[in-house]
Amino acid sequence: TYRVWLGAVSVTPGDVVAFAVTVWASFALSRLVRFVLEEEVYPRLDLGRGIPYAVSTLVHYFILLIGFLLGLAALGVELNRFAVLVGAFGVGIGFGLQTVVNNFVSGLILLFERPVKLGDQVRVADVQGAVERIGIRASVIKTWDGAEVIVPNGSFLSERVTNWTYSSVIRGLEVAVVVESSAAVEDVAEALRKAANCVDGIRNEPSPQVIGDGVTASSRNLRLRAFTDRFDQVDAVRSALVWAVEETLREAGIACTGVS
Image (cartoon, rainbow, N blue to C red; front, side, top):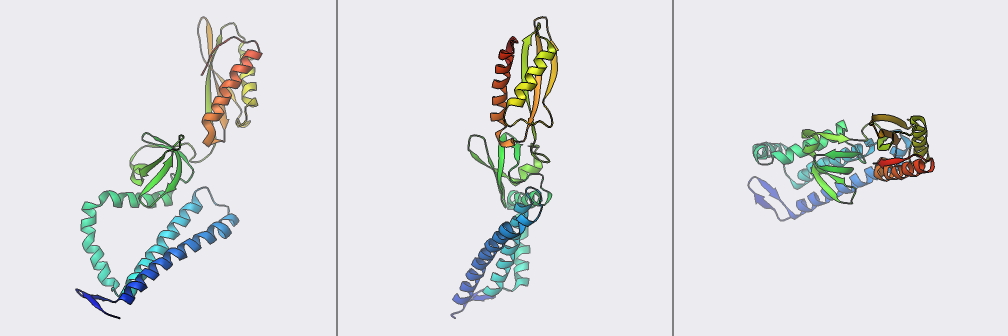
């Protein structure tokens, strides 16, 4: 019960313990609530992709904020004085921590507006990969080679962002094909569609399309356009499609001078 005075505020070891226990309890309560939501609530609701993560994150922030305020009350700090203190620090935060505050607010906007969701395949500046985490200050993007890149949340709002899975997980693939001019267009188109239908991961709807891309004196240039819902394996599916096209044209006796 020994009391220490710090200006107009006095605290005791018991107050400090009460503060620590309250903050710890808020973390434990947050973990429990999120566990119940993920195990019992979300599976029963038809929620869009990314909504459960956004709700759990906001619930986590809210519980921690309430726990921190209750901890201050347990510490003996009057909340009206705390509000004055926050206002005094506000000016310093505005000048010295502009980037941190901007990234924090941007993170809240990402959770509410959801232009980028957990698991989305995105490109931000020169970083491309899957969104693994949207944090309070920065997000984590995992690239195809296994690297985890920390991207400030503000970059998602201030820079141009390409999201291949924003409204649909279906992605388009294109393979350029060059055959000799003597090849019949109908035969080539049929062989290309057959090759696409043989590849695991290529969707039947939308169906594969064969597009003419130009004719020269010695060759015909075509593009095979196909679609896959394996957005996280798009490179592997396209690679399989390239080899299937080359093999199918060879089996059909069509002279092919290039597949890319």
